[in-house]
Length: 265
Image 1: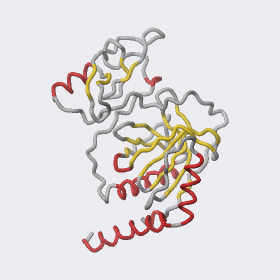
Image 2 (image 1 turned 90 degrees about the vertical axis):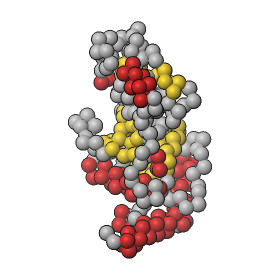
Image 3 (image 1 turned 60 degrees about the horizontal axis):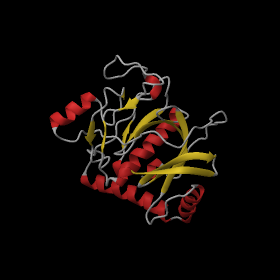
Image 4 (image 1 turned 60 degrees about the vertical axis):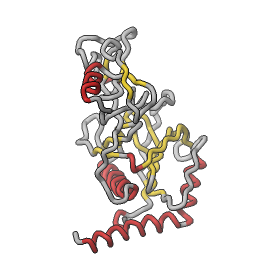
């Protein structure tokens, strides 16, 4: 593509989101989202546009949980659904310039899924259909590019995705120790594997994550010390939501809504 075409494409992308951000309807939508969150951080900001929203299933440590996601042109906001379409809590905000998207290949257990990675948290989400998945991925990709000034290659460290608890009944490091009521499961903050207490006694400083040393498995501890540098996959204290148990017996999929046409990016 010629430099003129690149400049034209960049201008179209900027004009499309700029036009959306200046509209009265966009301001109304953002205020509506902000008002529906319990103890919401301020979401109104000059130049910010709400690109789309929808309900996704977030694959957490213990089980999938229903979450409301809101895609802006600079941040991704999500939270726990208290009353569907009316009230949300436990608001989380991730800057899009810190996000990396892994499209995954999908699986029978988690079809229509993809991996969202960021320095503090990495997790899998799944849509209700392949079409909805493609819509989310396309809009996410465009918004991440926009937030990063047109660049898609990112080298920021991201959190390890924690292996769900039900994926292993035996330590993934020693392959000997079996988990029980008295032998609890732990997660290495660096690789995300499920490990036993004996294989994760070490602590290592991951400055992208915390000022304190965090739990790592013996293999990661050896690798991190050998390299004498911070590994590119630090994680936080708990990559799953700590907002209690939920009942999804009444869960009914709601199609996502996008307010920006892909062609106008």
